[in-house]
Length: 319
Image 1 (cartoon, rainbow, N blue to C red):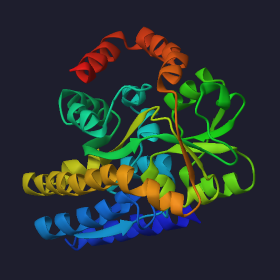
Image 2: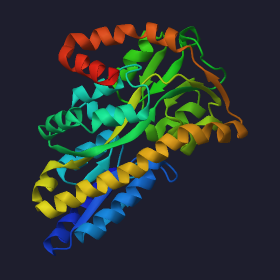
Image 3: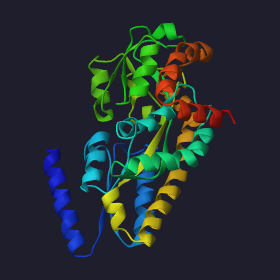
Image 4: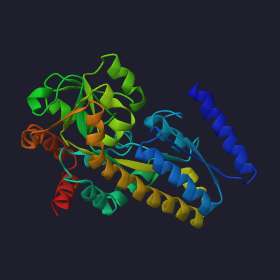
């Protein structure tokens, strides 16, 4: 079914281009109510007003999962995607380093790093693979939910079947903690939790709440074990067809929508716990020092492959 949709969209895009009536497809995997969805609506509004083009907003993984959307952007089937750090790390491995355990103490610290030289370097790596990073939105500092217990200590994770995104860094973190992690597409997660394939999962509170995962896994432990970004990427071939003014429109839309999305993500960390508790969730704090000690080996692994970048990230966050 998805292949039919891709073909139809590709055909409509070519026809629109022939008639000089440009249509931009902006695709992502988030549902209504999620900050990513809200920001995508904002992006469409700002870009359309600035460029004169029309924007087709395609949310909720209707055009495929994150990996499929990146492939579609490279191929020119879609133009822009608010994607995921995990999927992007399969194309730009260095982006996975942003998820080193406990690297960032808070969201503004992560944003400062992404908006600087690190973000520029990652964009250059992405362009080598046919993608242009327009900017970095937020995918929060992540916490663990479980069907039947809180996991305040790493010992509580032993043998836990936990869903991760398609991101080797997250798999490495939970293997170091003694869990049994396995990657799965976001769109398939609720069904997998309901059927008992997993004991739990990890995500920022905004994602947990908007997808109602706290109704399936009501035990929420504030582990804060890693950060993830939401890279907003364009197909490089499409980007190259834009004149300077339209390129600036795309960057402007990404920045303005990104400010909104980041603020919503940060606000959610404060406003959502009482809402979730009222809906039956049970919160617990984590023993952060024990978690940090248990995941120290993850730094050692990645420092062997990327010594300079790991060191640079540690120094940047220390400042």
